[in-house]
Length: 274
Picture 1 (cartoon, rainbow, N blue to C red):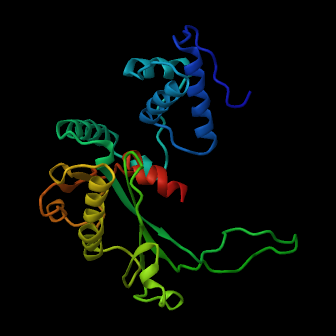
Picture 2 (tube, rainbow, N blue to C red):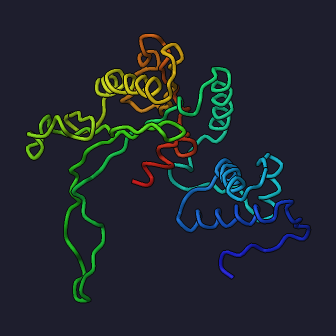
Picture 3 (cartoon, one colour):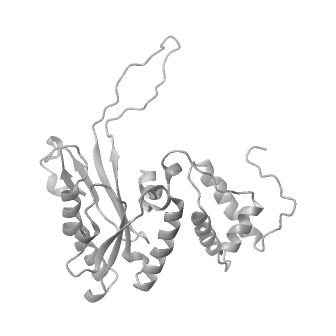
């Protein structure tokens, strides 16, 4: 049968058979959708499914090792961006980040991630339906684009406006509505983020929004307001010492180089869905 797993000679039944089967079903669904599945996402799925099933269970390293053995799973290098990813640095960073969050007493609502993506908004599909007598379909890809910055906190409860960068300071179709756009709008010659744009967004929008959310929604005292923003090392991002709030409590932490495809939440979640 396609997609079936050959039984192992000494395959042991898991102590929580219903949970194991639910996790494996989730794994098969993710693979069918073309999503990358890592050890971390398997463990997270196990934690979530155990709650859904009303089972008290902790997805330990030992459980993960046995689960992978039971279903014949292995690490497989993905071609493309992930193929050059630094898995060692990603794992070291993950451990250090967890320790930092614990040491500073940060809540998941205080940990943010942001990343940019491009949208070729006038691009047509690369294929089309054609008659049998049509051998070649001529046409060029339109490269009209805008850039968008997606960001959120780890518990996904703080709703933000997207940050958009276009080429025009006042696009003709929107010139009478610039002040009512449901986004923070910037412009640049190539419709891409740069150091000035990113800095302006960080200090004029991100920092005030975080303070407002934690004071008004989370009901934190002013002295307890703090946040950590995770970023990759894109050229448009200023150095870490340049992106710090006046009181030093809202700051950034850069991801290691070549780890975006492994541990960049915006890439694996929001941007992938968009």
